Image 1 (cartoon, each protein chain N blue to C red):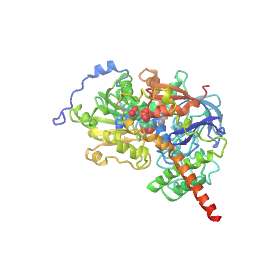
Image 2: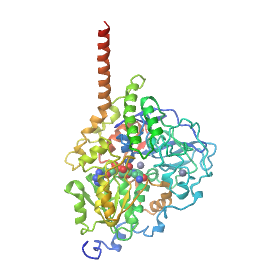
Image 3: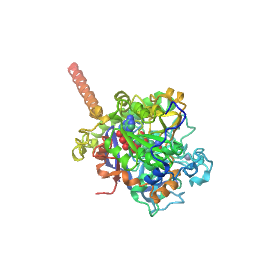
Image 4: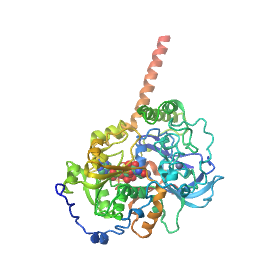
Length: 193
Length: 382
Ligand SMILES: NC(=O)c1ccc[n+]([C@@H]2O[C@H](COP(=O)([O-])OP(=O)(O)OC[C@H]3O[C@@H](n4cnc5c(N)ncnc54)[C@H](O)[C@@H]3O)[C@@H](O)[C@H]2O)c1
Ligand SMILES: [Zn+2]
Ligand SMILES: [Zn+2]
């Protein structure tokens, strides 16, 4: 009990546990645990045959955290910066360190802009987005959507209804922008007459 | 090649993408044979991780065959079957030289606070991931290992993250014989952490979740005592009641940024992105552990702030331990445990889904349909 010195006895003895659970106590000694101690200076252990790696090229234009001295010798090239989202991301990297909330908030805003730009852009391509199949919701029908939720004490049921709102947000926003642009264009042309 | 491509929150499709190229002399290109979806991928899928660009391919858990190697690669050649740790790391920076492989300084220009991870947004370096037919593997002489002949392929892919991370979570908790261990989250990471806690001599292992089918797995797979937090008014009070009001010696957060159980916390973080992650499970861990105890955090959080109860952690004199798992350092010992039959990783695999149906796979895993625990992705299934 918390109010007296001794630790409460366990329900099972060490022998019980050893008998019930395969491998119980195999790593009782911390020395048998991997990565122990946590920091151990051993530069040869990793397999690296360099002290500083060769540099990946080209890196001149690669965005980087201003907490870094330079662009790291290796980096990912998954998707480059482009459009308005790219400009926002460049500002986030150039001006604000990782310590600043502005850095992350601008990047998050750029992510939302990117979705809008890319989804709208896809309709000018040979491969337009399909907002329905891309959500994978057909699995609700093939993988027990109803019985996975019915009569279950699941905490996430209280907010799952918000997900479709988030999914459709860029489409709704896109439609609203298109509608007001069309309205303004009509107003301008009728003024011109 | 065919690859999973992110199109926006909760949306993805499979596209024809150019083959990855050797971009650095120590790169390899690996043809993926088996991949997996991780709880961490859900943070990307839900749009919570800053700088997740449309067009990115996710996937940091994969195994495959070496297809091509760069000019400076010495240890691998085409045809080798390799398992690849989820960390991208150079092996030689200040941090790698000390074994902190998940904290490498030479692979992620976008941030200094996190190392490199495959398919995990530009915030972790902008590398494409392995939920695809082919993937670029930087520092091929450092990260990948040849899959031993005796190892099952599904076990190998689970070793690239989930198993190594679960074990690491138990390890960071510095468990001593007889410790009472409570694990929040019965996903793959939590289940492996609970199982590993016994190997380190735990005297009692408790697992908390709200998904009954996962708690069932915690009882059968991890031999744990389980509680569904939805059945208790206040799970922290319940933890005190079942530990004679002392609290657990050790708490492990295996939930992270998606945590449920408090509508406001969940919605402000997961849906509205006003926090770096929902700290519900972390706060429960802080409040459930005993004074002087240890909280080990495996659950991932974004780089923004979260409303964590630091005052309680200070006043209770807690030790907080956490990191991304340095996967390859964990392997030799975990290989032994698998060979001895102490760990059977692929007992948690519930779904094996072709790459072409990856959108469904994410929805099933995210919405927890069909009693899903760990979905694997098959890039070459027709
Ligand atoms: N540190 C690392 O190296 C590392 C590596 C892999 C995964 N992770 C992180 O570990 C976490 C778990 O990964 P996973 O693959 O097991 O994911 P998962 O989504 O399958 O599991 C999370 C579990 O937590 C449960 N849960 C939600 N709210 C809870 C609460 N308040 N209390 C208790 N349980 C709750 C969910 O029902 C679910 O079963 C994720 O945050 C992931 O990002 C970290
Ligand atoms: Zn992962
Ligand atoms: Zn390094």
